Image 1 (cartoon, one colour):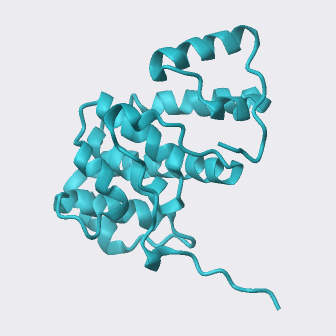
Image 2 (cartoon, rainbow, N blue to C red):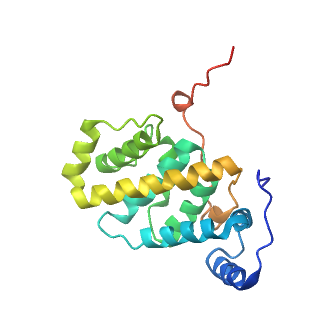
Length: 199
C-alpha cells in the first residue's frame, strides 16, 4: 500500500499498547495506524468513538455491519470492506451477504429490510444526500425510531472513516484473507460520479 501520507513510527507507551492490541486482534499492526499516528488525538478520538459505537444495541448488528459495508463500497474504501469482512467472520455474520454488498441490487441473497438498509446507506452517502421520505418511513416502520437513529449515526460514522481512508490513500491490508473474501469495492457504472471538466 502506498499512502498519500507516509506512515510514522508507532512509539511510546500508547504506541506499545496500540501495537499489542492490533497484533492480538489482527495478527499484525496495520500500516494505516502509522498514517494516523501523526496526529494521536485524532486517532484516539476516532478509536474511542468506534469503540462506543460498538456498544450500541438498539439496531441489529448485522444491519449496521451491512450498512457500513455499503458505505465503504459506495465510497470505494477497500480498507473498510476488508476490515468489515474480517469482523463479519468473527461476529458470525452471513459472509455470502457480506461479499455481495457491492452488488446488492443484482443479488438475491438480501431480505427486503436489508435492501432498504443498503439503499438508505447509499442515499446518505450521496452528495447531495439523497434520502427520500419513502425510504425513511419504511425503515422507521420496520425498525422503530431508536434503531433508525442508531443506524443513521453508524452510517454517518462510516462516511467519516471511509472518506478519510480514501483521501489518504489507505487501502486493503488483507484482513479478510482469513475468511477467503476479497474486498469487492467496484461500484456499478451508474453510481460513478460525473466530474465536470474545467474550461
